[in-house]
Length: 451
Ligand code: F0G
Image (cartoon, rainbow, N blue to C red; front, side, top):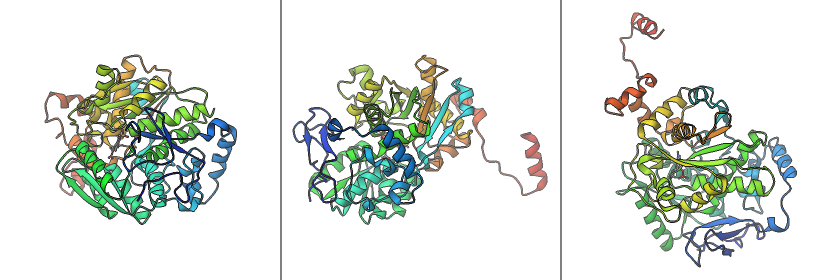
């Protein structure tokens, strides 16, 4: 079994190539570990035909608008609707889709007041079919896996990738193998993988250990890896940025702020922004900033202490388990897009994450802890003067509130910060459940207490 190549039946020969991010080598095929055959660095998808004939920006915008009126599966997908900027398939009926993308852009008036940034929005990727941004990448990578004839797909995960992969594998009639760190992912995410029939292995290691093992596995077994090291995943995740710009009527925001874990998503959004400028869909770039948990701050340290030249790995620890990653695979891609867009990289504490998550929840939309780092990080960037009050900011909320109920319940019950001095800072945001006798009087008295 070879990996996907441009000569795979059904893949349009002329549409794309694999390009090494370090030596620039262009190739028609990628090996199982998605590493450059010459220098071993990561691959990305390139579209050499754009050099000869750029897709026309006005025609693209109008085609994407028109597809919103269509009822075909590829047009109903908020990823494949933008297929002109994705690796193409001859037969569009072959896509594995759950109608991913199409995620809302919300105003955040309450958070805007708190932070003093009136033009504040959230692009809520947690509204995807399996509840996270992973679906946008998975529809593309799973489709190419099936076209290449793979029976098995696999991933290492902090939970969301596995939930998404399990769903798309099942929809596409493939088997899924999931490697997750034992005891370190939320039950909600684990239950999604089980429900969709993936073979789910809880390994006695952390995420980085799971990913290392997967890399070894794919060199030996005909299993197609669907981590974000797979460049097809990042192509799908690009569409978040395209859809966002379309929702803003192509008015470019000043800042896009995204959480950073394995750093695939920031890389994908950055690639989309750069490509959109190349194709003149937009005339300037927003600053793309990445926020990490203080306990999993490999990119922060890599940029501050090594000038972005070499990765500084860290032992990762945070209750935002989705981003509990110490050795991010796509650090070079992320460092590049941060530099290209002029973005910042910040870190936030556990308390700041919990605080921001409660503030987003109070807007009526909620998100998972890893997503809340964006608001927490933005507050810091405002203090530093990097984000200015008159600028437009979009926070990318990556996962749904229901992904990690334990975090939310522990927070509201006051069980998160051990009742120590730290917990006082967030007391006004806590709404613990109230146990009462089943009497009208008890409920009436409670109502009065909160009036
Ligand atoms: N937010 C959520 C909700 C995530 O699940 C992840 C990553 C991230 C942010 C970070 O994105 O890795 O592209 O920088 N979750 C992965 C997983 C690693 O296995 O589900 P990234």
